[in-house]
Length: 247
Image 1 (cartoon, rainbow, N blue to C red):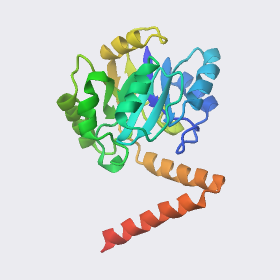
Image 2: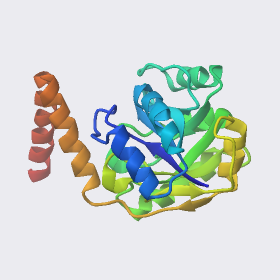
Image 3: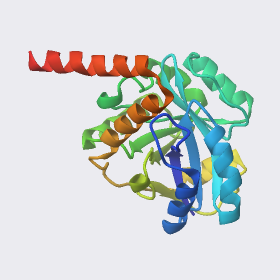
Image 4: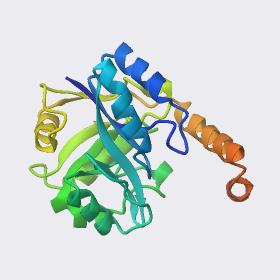
């Protein structure tokens, strides 16, 4: 069974990947199950789950939540969890609805603002079901090594399953990073966890265009919404950073 974890759709602020196109890509790549984990929303995952039924592709409803301490993914969710809460409360809310706690990209110097703090990774280890030791958007091989080291240092493999996360935001990223396992009940979190524990991780290098693509998409969406204040802040930060690098 081919499972692709941590996928974004157009319901994320930095993706234009429509649910219809995602379904087509999953069929073309023989993907049996995906975990849709949009930023701070489950609306895309719910719509995908309904639409994918007729294509015989299973969808796990997830959410990549921006907590006060960095990002945490919740899988098998029934209701949306708001952004900005502490990592502890976020994990509690995930578990309260029978969901599973998943830590994405536990190391990435290019996305340091979204990486969950290591002290929180350690604190949440007893309740963490999954941690990425490979993320499809790692732009350097050293990131994967550091992610593995972080997982080994702070989490117990008997409790926390090591996985490869796709983190696909665009059509050209789908079907490149996934898990191969025996069949499991996609409605059973416990069966899913055991299947991922025994699964084989299949990985591919990050496309050089991936991060540039999401930056352009985010700016485009802000422009469409007329959110010029945020656009101005982003451009200003880039200019300040560029001036510092030059000096």
